[in-house]
Length: 116
Image (cartoon, rainbow, N blue to C red; front, side, top):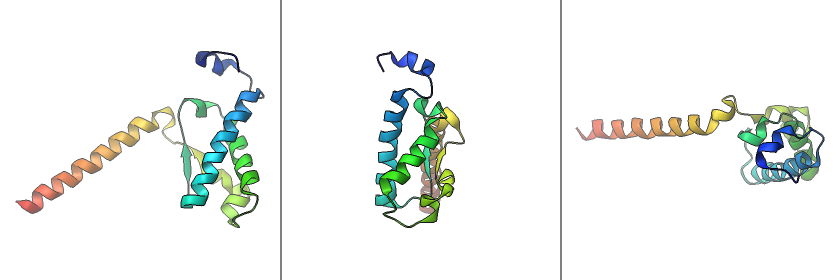
């Protein structure tokens, strides 16, 4: 894009850099779908604040899958509920880390109670 990372936010939604980003993110989604058949793919982080990316990623994911799998949640507009932004916005990473820490702490507490 011939700009700094800080300047990306100033690029228009129709700039080719967003199409390229959507391509790579859609390839990742396709791999997730084919390898793990997830019910939901949650995307978050700085670049995902660019809301124009979600429709592009969903469309490219469907194009790249080329009806290889016949799952209505993937092949129809229902894909909007499969590839989604995090409900925690740009805080998803820290929220996820805290949640995993809480799970680990709870497990540690359980194991110390059963040993007592």
